[in-house]
Amino acid sequence: MDHIGIDIGRVLTGPTVDGVADTSFLGTTVAEAMHSPPATGAFAFIEELVRRYDGRVWLVSKCGASVERKTRIWLEFQRFHETTGVPRSHLRFCRERHQKADHARELGLTHFIDDRVDVLRHLRGLVPHLLRFGEDGDPCPAWAVPVRDWNEVSEWFDSNAAPQIEVARH
Image (tube, rainbow, N blue to C red; front, side, top):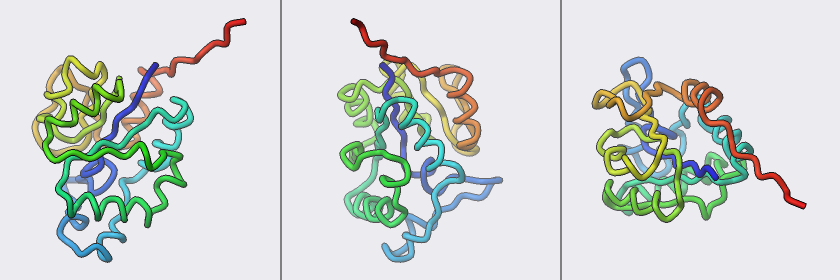
């Protein structure tokens, strides 16, 4: 059964678009950060993933305590949980990048979308499908799938990751 993990920073919020990084979320007050928009298409496709995978979608983010607080407030302000169907209990934070592997192991993640190759390296061999999100950063290694934006994430899932359908046995 598939379980999907999604990073937040530079994936759900503030991705680089046409070579321009949106860092407004990180360098602002909580009030200013609320108006930082989500990545184009992110909420709509995450809602689709929640439907396809029967709610088995988690956000897993590495950040400090202040950014965690700001992120939780931003998710509420943007009505993320109501819009996508991702439960609040499916929000995980860690302080070190390598700790995402602990969450992946615990949740049984089969897919992970992250902008950082160094994070994906920790998940290699643990999570079968690794998607390197965005248009900047380290080059995408051969063992990960490069996706520039949420449209390409959607295309990849449509082509490669048909959900497992549970068949009722009588």
